[in-house]
Each structure stands twice: as structure tokens, then as C-alpha cells.
Image (tube, rainbow, N blue to C red; front, side):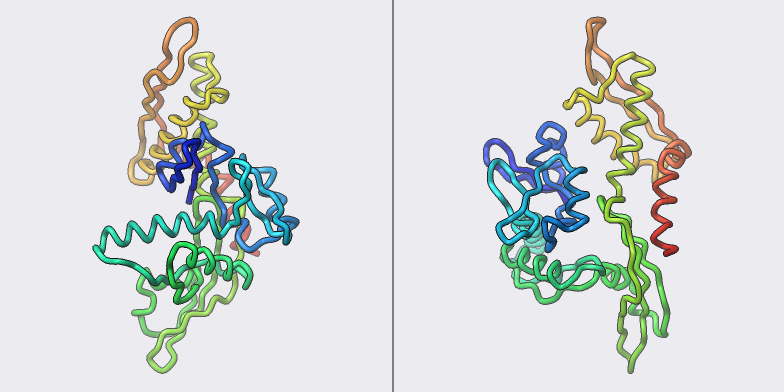
Length: 285
């Protein structure tokens, strides 16, 4: 969920926003879910301020807002851009107008956060019929409501920027399936981005060892590398190895430099082992 505001007043959502993130960091917003419905002095917001490249500010009422191009934006306004994009995608696919939606939120969201999410839906031109918990939606998607009988399941949800673990009780009451979230825990600062970063840092280190060139200060090279690392990570979920091949990644006085590196699944697993262990901590507490 990435939104970017460009110099020519265009709003980019998703992949197009991601592609220019390294060259436009202060106007490229992500993990807005961490801010929605929270006050500026909230512990999570204060931690976020130290970690993101964009500017988080306090609104007049004390809410956490974001400053983009000298303009203050409320998180529901920003989230609405994602919902508008999803609305259009659904309309293009179905060939008809979409006016109503059910929106999912993390199970730990409080009333303020749920209301702010509803506001985002309204701004996007949607009538929000219901707000439901993400783990409940996951259980429904996997057809858990089709299997009769009572059961308890764990939903392990490792997203782009946050990790959640939820225990759900599914009960068969008079032929109707009911879902209840019994417990939820997580890490608001653990997600796929952290896995990408481990791989990116490894590639930068290997390239420096081989060529003597440090790519970390070259924003255009890092943007290409970020995209290649994410693609490589995805490929390694179904392959034992992948090639990172970036010709003309940079140049110095000796001429152009090309990046070519083989990454195995075993190598990726060793790089992210500490992140996997970190995700298990909320599962045990």
C-alpha cells in the first residue's frame, strides 16, 4: 500500500508509486495503517517518525497527520487513494459501478481506527457496509465457514509492513458459522519490507566486495536494486535459486559496472532467519 505525490501533482498508487520511491522518498507514503486513528503523541507514531522518510506532524486536534509538499493530509485522505484505486480496478474487471464495500482491518484496531477506516471508504466514494477483522476475512477466504463443527485456528499474517497473529474460534451455532477473535498479537514494525532490506543490504555488500563501489549512496541504482531484490525474493518462494542481473548499474572512472549475482533459497533463509524468529515472539506471548 504505497501512495506517491509527484512534482507535477499526480497521485501514484501501488507499483507506479513504488518504482519512484527511492528518488522521491519524502513524498512517497507507506504503512499509513500505522497512523490511522492514532494521536501524534501515541507511542507507535513516535516510533514511526524515527523510521520513515516522510514527515509525520500533529493536526490541530492532536491526531497524527502527514505533511506532503507543504500540505497536511489526514491518514483517511491518504488511505482513500488506495481504496479509489481498488474501486476502479474492481469496476474495470466487472464492467459496472461499485458503490458499496466491506473493508477489513487488523483485529486489534480500536473504535477510533475503525471509524477512520470507514471515513477513508466514504472519501473514496464507497458506502461501507461493514468493517470486519482481517483474520476473519482470511478464514472465510480459505473456506473455513464450509467445514462444519467447532474449531480454533491461528492466522499468521505477515504483511508488507506489519505482522499479526490471531487466534480465531469458529463455532457452528444452529447451522450458522460464527467467528470470534479470541486473542491477537503482533509486531507493528515487521513485514515484507524488512525481508527485502536484508536481501538488498547483502547484494550491496557483495557488489562492494567485488567492484569496490558502494551503491548505497546512488538513489537510481538503489531503486533498480530494490525492485530486483523484491522480484528475486518472490522467485525464491518457488525456485531454489535466482539471478540478480542489473547491467550498467553504475559507473566510475574505470567504466560502467554490471551487477550479476546468484542467490539461493538457502542464502535468503539464512539472511532472514532472525526476522522469522522475531515473528514467533508474539505467537508465544
